[in-house]
Amino acid sequence: MTRAAAAVEARFSILIVEDEAPMRKVLRLILEEQSYEVFECGTGAEALAFISRSPPSLVLLDLGLPDVDGIDLAKQIRGQCPVPIVVLSMRADEHSIVEALDNGADDYVTKPFRENELFARVRACLRNVPPGGAREIDGVRVDPVRRVAFVRNREIKLSATEHRLLWVLLRAKGNVMTHQQLLREVWGAAYVRDAGYLRVYMHHLREKLEEDPSNPRWLLTEPGVGYRLGGE
Image 1 (cartoon, rainbow, N blue to C red):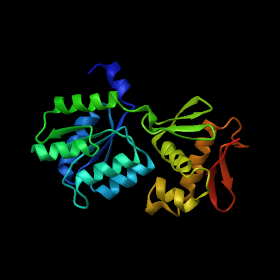
Image 2: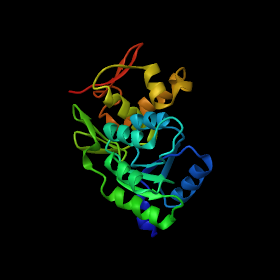
Image 3: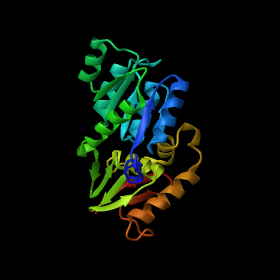
Image 4: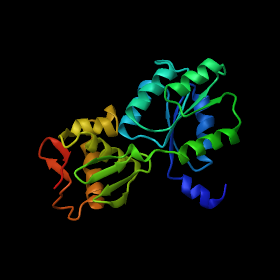
């Protein structure tokens, strides 16, 4: 891959949903070598929670998960987000392949796989990422694939955490999110008492989104409660 191609693909993130840690490690290594940002989940529940916080560019999905059948998970993901899904499974029979494709998967690769074929299929799915994945309220739009925000059509690049935080606020549709809710959604249940994280990243977001960060128009504080996304 050329340096220019790697720079283009560096903006894409891939979520590996696979219960076997050695396979996750292999996939992470080979995908990171191709300049993808890689995340991992070992169960369907973890995957759904991750996607609800910050949808990746693509999901690489094993069908044999401990808590849910991969076919059912593909349907749930497809109902939640337009992210492309590539199934990576030991199941090589025609019925499994057809069922996966009929229930939300965009492509199907059988194990053991050839790296170059997997990369080609991933690239093909990313070329066809639908543009309708963004969410918008009152002039603020978040693109879940490119990890950017638009405020009145002004494009703003976000870090992964900034993106997750803004996505959660946008998903609330102007309703107040408490400090604990935001900490749980963005950082996880172990961080619900660490309000410092939230204050720091709200400051970062205001610096990027607001014309006057000290007098915010979009990222509003509800004193003693939390934050909400406002508008004009």
